[in-house]
Image (cartoon, rainbow, N blue to C red; front, side, top):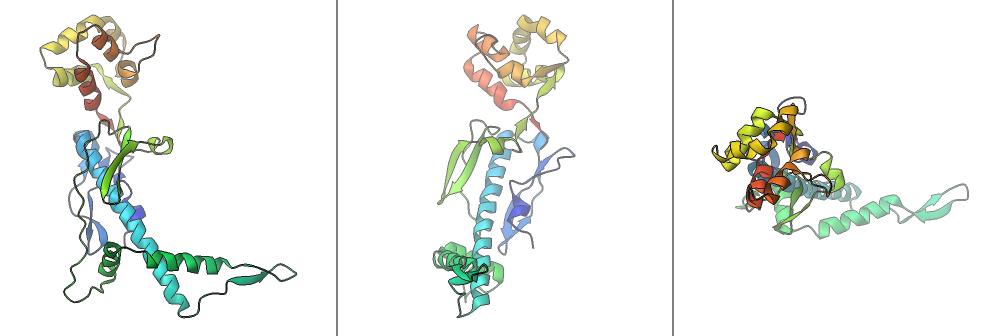
Amino acid sequence: MLRSNDVGCGAYGAAGPGWIARWTLVDGWPRCLDAPLAIADTDPATLAAQVARNRALTALLEQVERYEAAQQLLNSTGDQPPPAWIASGPDGALVPSPAWAAWQAAQSLVATATPALLQLARTRAGILGDDEPAFTLALPPPPVLDDPCEMATDFVAGAWTVRPLTPAEATSWPLRRRPALGKLAFAQLLATVVGEIQAPLLLAPFSSMLSLAAEISFTDIFQTTPSAPGYAHQLVSSGTVTPAAAEALKRSWPLAPP
């Protein structure tokens, strides 16, 4: 049976084009019933929403797997819990028993399981009560992120929360921009965002810089420092484009495979 660590955020294909799997639940177990989303050809907002749903499903599966493990531990001990103290060392000194601590933790976890979690566990075990429906995964639509490459969405206590990626997450996050685009690809992207009429006007002031570069770096376009303003910042400062257009260009930048 597939488990939570098989789901994760849904990204796979690091050696190829890159995909985001579309996970759901069937009889309480993770399954992919729909075709995956190609990272290179799918809108980042759509990809981010699917990553959020996959991660929410992963968190739910982790909860039910912990419950199942706790219940299995309690069933294995029956009515006789392990001793709270055990002898240790050459002198036989009594020390707290790890088995007792694990048994107590299992007791607490089982006692605090929510009705929905219990229904999911019964669905997975095939022991639903008479006329009891199987657990179904029902998530509200995730919020649209300002920047799917720098933000994560968590489903906590029945609601979505948005936060910046942690440094650890950023190193392996599946939605990452391509470091650079070819000049033609960049010109086509610019035309898509600002229109084919305005795009040549925006490229003209920087034609010398663009002609020297084999590729157009995302960092060169958007990273701004006091001594080296980025391309987009220069265009906004000169009044050539609006801040909204520069932000649209940033959001539209193609993604790289995972």
